[in-house]
Amino acid sequence: MTEAQSVNMDVESSSPWVKSLGLGLGMLVFFSMLFSDAPEGLSHEGWTFLAIALLMAIWWMTEAIPVAATALIPLVAI
Image 1 (cartoon, rainbow, N blue to C red):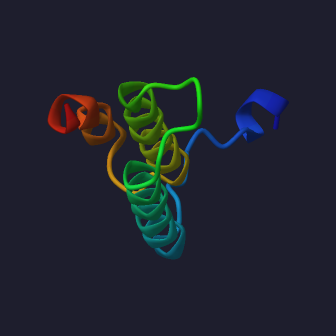
Image 2 (cartoon, one colour):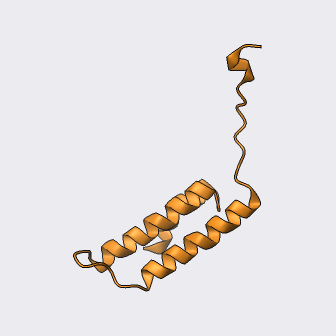
Image 3 (spheres, rainbow, N blue to C red):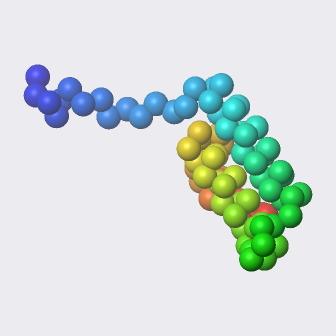
């Protein structure tokens, strides 16, 4: 068998506990940033944007929800 044939093209999704952890961790990071003060030199809008971006990044990495649904978060959050 050649190397190309031995490569498994199936991509496994995250395990259920990783998805649950990502869902909870993403929400925890988002709300903790949302209800804390922005660092000096960063506007409230910039801090909110960063909170949304981190939520999306955590959910993308853990595949807590489908990637297509994660991409819609800014439309819902703003």
